[in-house]
Image (tube, rainbow over all chains, first blue to last red; front, side):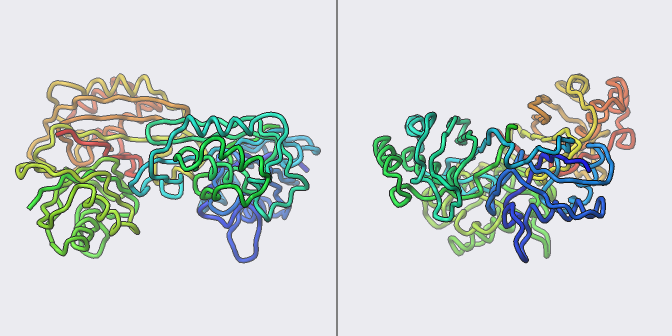
Length: 246
Length: 246
C-alpha cells in the first residue's frame, strides 16, 4: 500500500463542497470514484479541510491509500483521465510516509479572497471573484486586519454558528491585502481556521474598506467575541483554498 | 438621436460569436434585445469587428443609435440590467458624434492570446485559456514574431479560407510575448486583422516555441504566402479581443 498526497485544483461552483453528500456532487466523491475507476479499490480520500459549495481550490491537499503499484506520474495522469469531465484536477501525486495525514499533519493553511471593485456585473470572472461596488479603500482594511494578526485571539465574532471546533481561540499568522487595478486580494495564513472564518473576516473588513465602519468599530466588533456584532459573511465565490504547508 | 459608443466584455463560450445568426445566441442579438427592452426601439448594433464562437472580449466596441434621451450612466446600467442573465456586460456608454463608426473609425485593434503551459487539464481557467503541454520557450517565439512586425507583409499563410478581406497585405504593428509563471501572453496590435489571423499566427508560433519548427522554418512558412504551409489554427478559447483605439 502506498499513501499518496494529492494536490488538487477545483471549481467550487461545480460542487456542493468538499465533503461527500447524498445526491449532490462533491469533490471527495469525484476523487473517490476516479480512484476506483483507476485501480478498482475503494479507499476513502481525506482532505486537509472541508470547503463549502462555491469555494475554489488552487492547492487543496488530500491523501489516499492505494494498493495498486504505480508511479506518481501515473497516479496523477490516470486520475486526471477519469476526472476529465469534472471541474477538478490533480496537480501532483507524491508518495508519502504512512503517518502523513492531509488534515492532521498540516502546519499552515493559506486562503486567498479575490474581490473585484466595480459597478459593472462580472462576466469573465463570474463565479471566480466577488464583486463589490463603491469606493473601496485598502489601507483601513489592512489596519483593521492587523488587529487580528499574531498572538492568540478569540475569533467568535467571525465564527459561524455551525462551527464544530472545540475552541474559538486561534492564531492568525498573516493577513495581507494587495491591490492590482480594480482587484483586491486578501491573503490569510493560519494553522487552522474556524468555520466561515475567512468569509466572515472579509465581510467585516469590507465594511471598513467602504467607510461604513471605522477601524475602531471593527476593533469593538472583534473584541465583542459575538457573531451578531460582526458584518455579513462574504460570498463563497471569491474564496480560494490556496495551499497547505506540511 | 444619440449615437452611443459601447465598450463590452463577453464570454465567447456562451455565444455562437459576435454576429447575429438564426437560432443561435450571438452577442449582437443579446445587445439588440437589451436595447429594445430598455427603450422600445430596434436599432442595429454595429461592432468594431466580428469574433468567433469561443473568442472572448475585454474591450470590444460597438455603436448604436438611440432616440430615447438618457445619460451614459443610465444607458450602461439599463443595458446591464437587461443583460443580467447573459455572459456580456457594458463597461461604458459614451455619447459620440454621428460620424463615429465602431468598425470604420477604428485606428488600432489589440488582441490578447492567453496560453497556459502545463500537463494537467485546466479547471479554473477552462474555456478562458488554451493549454499547451511540453517544453515551451518564449524567446524563439518572440524572434519568429518579430519577422512579421512593421512594414507591409502578405499574411496569406495566416489567413483563413473564409476570409472576406480584399487583400492579404497588412501591417502588424506589434507582437509581444510575455510570460508569468506557467502562463504565456501574446499581444498583437494592428489597424486590422485577417480572418483567423491571430489564431493562425499563434498556432505557428507554438510550433517554434515547442521546438518543432526553427525560426527559419517559420520564416519560410510566412514567406510562402500559402495557408497550407502554416501551422494549425490555435483554439478560440485562448483569444481575447482586448481593446480598440479610435
